[in-house]
Length: 168
Image (cartoon, rainbow, N blue to C red; front, side, top):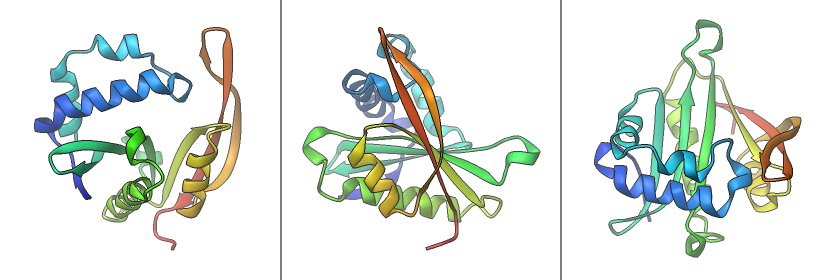
């Protein structure tokens, strides 16, 4: 399994895997698959080349099977924080350690940013495998946002988690 930084040339695969995530787990995202599917491929390519969003992919050969991102903050008083976002693995690649490799890759990227001291994330309450993965990677719950996402008539809470960038 190769974990590497994504760029504009990966846009089509990144878009396809992201749309798969939106379709399979709509409760995990504030945007809907309809919203994201309507966005042109050029937007996806530009996002991959944006210096404030560092995106990593897990590749099996030439096929992108997993993704995760790290968003850096622009604001002067928040530059010490970064947000892990969009962790997703194709179904066939779950439970094999690829998610752990992706999170470790994001943590390494965060450590390369000297201003980053804290990494934060949100995860849908009830996503037990994801929560367990984040805990194994040193994240601790720091809050709970009730009714954070609404899909149809259903509401989902979000657990806020964080960890220091440079601790074990």
